[in-house]
Length: 341
Image 1 (cartoon, rainbow, N blue to C red):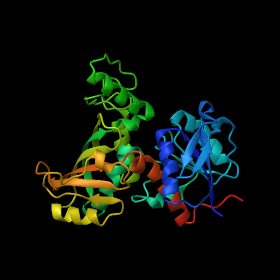
Image 2 (cartoon, helix red, strand yellow):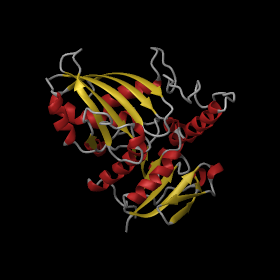
Image 3 (tube, one colour):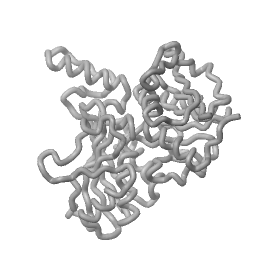
């Protein structure tokens, strides 16, 4: 017998990717339920190559007897229904931002801090922000060997980070631009087609956006509370795949050769850095891949013990769906997930 798994937000981009990932990794599920908002109830979604699931209404769904809830319905919805699921005995792995910084909710990337799963108190585990996940996967082995002191990062984030509506807007605006039709931004604050927007999420009092704040506070919660992070997050006209230019100051000396050696041995990391035309990975090439790719590794001479690198990952997979499924797999491996009676 396997585990009963409810995928909440199953009709969204991340929810569909979760269903795809569960099937591809042959997750030990005896039953999978697709759950979404009342307006999506009755729709059908694919699970694997041959199975079609009918979407069930989240507001009426009974989580009693379900072992795992993989949530990606939006923060406001998770705030209501994730505690309800946990109270029914269903362990919730939530992809939204709602629970991430609550002290009694583990914020987990399995390659980085799997030990945090032993501190589950409320039956809820948080999946970090997509841009944070790929960065800490690359930083973790470097931190263990050389001690990360400070990170300055510029992100180049695809529109799928804003969900299906963001992808639709890029498609529509691209078509209209090519035929010189008028464009009125809806999902983003300015035209995204053939443009870059240095604004993701809401602005805060200090001039940072909430996305930039998330990268700083989440990195400290996951990796080390003493690490300083300065982020600039930019939305770019790419459908899937986030890229980051990461500059790191370490406590101890680090060479490019040592960094490559450490990163090549790290779980979840693929180094592609040949210092020639095309000897790096782009967001397009990361689509559908599980790894976090690291390229352009070089010394940063502007700071002591400095290193710079280019980091790319599929934000719908490792940045969301895959990380959530890996958390569930790690719970099983650690003996922390008991099947419902």
